Amino acid sequence: MPMNDPKISSPQLSVVVPLYNEVESVERLWEAIHPVMEGLGKSYEVILVDDGSRDGTRDKLRALAAAHPQLRVILFRGNFGQSAAMAAGFSATRGEIVIAMDGDLQNDPLDIPNLLEKMGDGYDVVSGWRKHRKDKLVLRKVPSKIANKLICSLTDVRLHDTGCSLKAFRGEMLRRISLYGELHRFIPALMRIEGAEITELAVRHHPRRWGSSKYNLSRTFRVVMDLTSIRLMMKHLVNPLVFFSAVALFFALSGTLSLAAILHAVAARNAALAEMNILVTLTVVFWAAAAQFFFFGLIGKLIVQTGTRKSFLQVGQ
Image 1 (cartoon, helix red, strand yellow):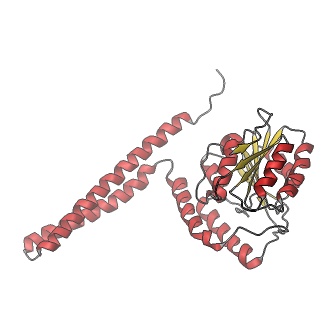
Image 2 (cartoon, rainbow, N blue to C red; image 1 turned 90 degrees about the horizontal axis):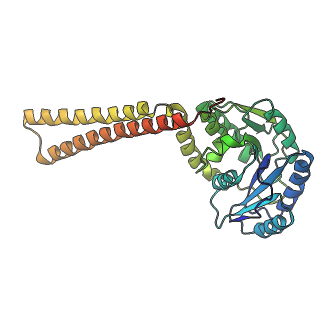
Image 3 (cartoon, one colour; image 1 turned 60 degrees about the vertical axis):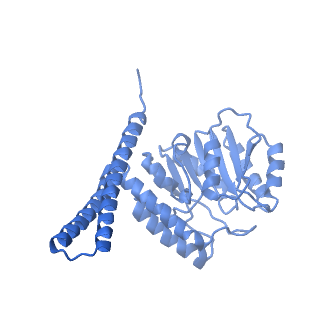
């Protein structure tokens, strides 16, 4: 449910912050962001997305939105996760540059001008690097370092800190990507698929002073699954027929082996009827799967070629 439609039709900058049960920090967050954005001398909007808070955060957001025309608020009816909140915020932006950050004040809005300055060098993504991170070693730093190395190795996006929420994006490119699951962790990789130029910048990081962390190790499985999806997209997006054809070949060979077993059993006349039925069923299933995956590949290739024809920019007459 969006609130407080902005009076600025096309702001130059958009700031997106997802929130969940941050009643103690939400007013301080606005008080930290507002003077920084005012000091930039550019038109801006701040979009705060509440992901179904139950601690009074929503009431604070309503009061802030009523008092500040630059502030827009999106209220989720339930808790759908950080990726959903960020996706809603990104789709609502209209700024040429979009800045994303966390709502717990561990990210510092004072770093926004530095991110924008770096964007001026022609980059499409400037990712924050919490060089001196203020988190607990075992629960946050160690898992983060392991995840960072894994993500960088599989996505070929070389960053010191993939988990830092403080990032600046080229708005037109950002609004083309889709987020689900835990994909908010892989936004630079998704933008690399779109052809983005990516760099990073060391930023401040503060210890959490209000509220409690929403991080837990139970999200690891979902992260791994989404990372697998990202890897497949980055490797096979240009020609998905190669990947699906390899899978189809595996099933076709399995079906051929099943047929060979049937022919051998018939020649030897030593197979029971039940065994023959199983082998016939396996042969049909394997060959049907092979045909299915091959046609999936053809459909994927047609989709990619159609999108490629439309994803270009014509300059001049």
